Image 1 (cartoon, rainbow, N blue to C red):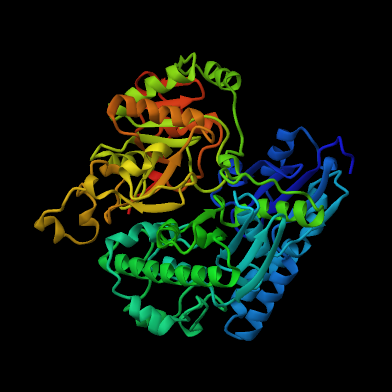
Image 2: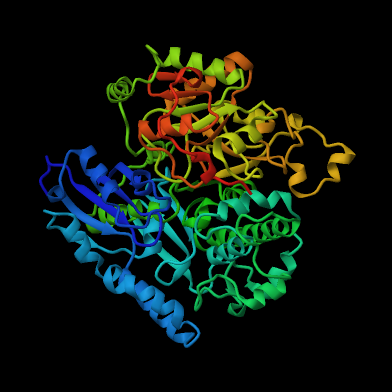
Length: 613
């Protein structure tokens, strides 16, 4: 390698769900994006052509400049698992087997050839780390720790579903694992399916629904579905599940155990679904706590890093941190399969190229995960002027944040599109819809008039890092919205006896604190701490709001509507703004007011696509 020429490594994840690309430059995380943000197909699984092109264009390079390309798992080993599983369940699994084979024989088995074909001019090496090695690398290498325990938990990779490992310097080893079909992620997905939500995207809805229910079914789950050991290892009774052989997650035996067939999607949610959600959440938390305790015991490390889809369960993460099993926890913000692209690239840099690792014990290396596309004021201005959309151009961040802070204090809902886009499922103040956390009506307004989504879904607070302890029983970094913590006792509003007798969704409209719009029914909140080094403009905005109101907390939800990916380009932000009940839109330094915008032409009955539960 030429010393004066940067070394570029490209990571790719694709062909299952949430395909993505990530680029390293001399080992530094340089760019990363999910394909869905470009194609507007939620959880897009195709080869991430647009994401790859974005990464290369940002660096000003072509595929010929890449040293190594890393794909996030081993397709042939995954195919082996699918083949063996279907043969083991034959003839029951033949329908699912024949449904899966065409795409494998046409596409997935030839990933190496596809990568060379797509990356025209690339002649370097392609590597295939194991799926959970990619997750582990994405968890440990960007973390602020010189050494740490690593836990990865998801549905399934090739064979592994859960792993425990150790990271030290630039080395990483996985030492313990659980294998398919015994999977905590697939157990949670089975309940996602059974409660009427979509697998691989609706799991967070189950987590949000859980506080409305009671843990009625915990014993039933532990006595029948999962044999859980003290060290966190477990086996599932596969007679209750159908994902090995069929096209559904659960079997008739599962349905009989829980008193009936799965809820039909979009039908009314009953107390049963809420209790099921609460129960599987409690079981998940118990499994994760036992795994963490075992990881601490066998690794001897004081800090924990995590990735895999289950690591996005921020309620479980918050309880792990509160339990004090580890001194600190860092979770990869793109913990699911999208983050596998980043992990694969990091494996290539550290293990194949022998690249060094620089550690900052106070700051992670993820750059706030603001790694996606960015649009400067010049390009935004050209778009607005060409379209003829009225705007006010702000001269400084102070002027912009002062104006927006005042509108927030007046209970206006604002689309905030500023800086590079987030990599991962959470909007973190670059592509966000924001509002006043003090407003009792804001949760309902934003769910029904802005997001067009289920009314029970909670919103997250963005809070100044230096003030987080004033509002929450929490005093740590949570920049990636991956920790849930209780609202402080003195902020809470006691329920009346009548309110205490309410069940399920009836609890929704009962104010729980002096920041009711972000306080969930169990007095918790999914916290994003905001500091000035990761996102100075967003930090300044919350400071301005605090100066006006005395409250350093605002609502932050992703800039999209139900069924769509987060907006990526200014055009998408403007359309979402106009098609919903938002009052103002920030596009870089430009502020747009809904009341003075011209009506959209040929827009059609857009909102009818987003039916409410």
